[in-house]
Length: 96
Length: 120
Image 1 (cartoon, each protein chain N blue to C red):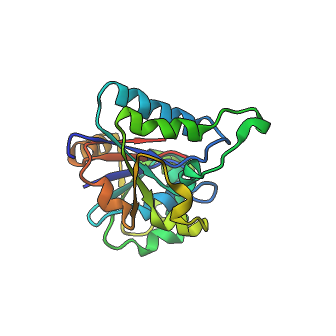
Image 2: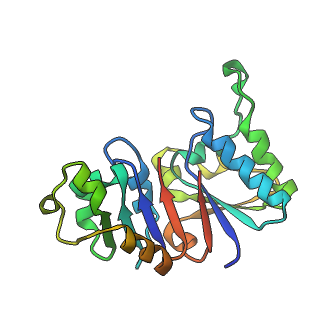
C-alpha cells in the first residue's frame, strides 16, 4: 500500500488533485506543512475508503483546530509518521 | 517490477527547472543500469508534446532529452489518461520514437508495486 504525502495547499497547487487521481484502494494519505489546509477542502469528504492522517504540529501551527477537520482524519505526531513510513511502500511525495 | 523505480513527472517543461532535472535524473540512473519507468501525470504530459521549439525563449529542447530515453534503455512510458483528457491532448501527439507509451486509467494501481517512487 502506498503512503501519499501532500505538503502543499490544495487552494494554490495541483498536488492534492494529482494525488487523489493516483489513489489506489487501501492507500493512505498524510497531510503535512501547507498540505494541512486540505483539512478545509471538500475533496477530503468523499474519501471514505482512504485512511487520512495529518501532522498535528503543522495544523496547530496554522491555527487549524482539530474540530474543523472531519472526524475521519487521524491527527499524528512525528513518531507515528515514522511508523507510517515503515508500514507503507512505496511512499510518494506530492510537494508541488 | 518490484525492484524497479518509478519516476513521477508532473512538471510542465519550461516554466521551472524541475521537468529537465527529472529527465536528467532518469537518464543518469539509466546510465547506471538502474531499471526505471516513467509516469507522466498532470502538467507533466506537456513534456511529451511534439514540435517543441523553445529557441525563442532561449532554452534547450527537453523533447530531445526524452528522445534519448530509449537509447538509455528506458522504453516504458506511462501516461495518465485523465490528465490527457483534462488538457485536451490526443494520444497521437505524445509519441516518443522507440518508446512504448501506455495510457493509464488508474495511476494508483500502477504506482503500488514499485519499491521506490521519485517525484519531479
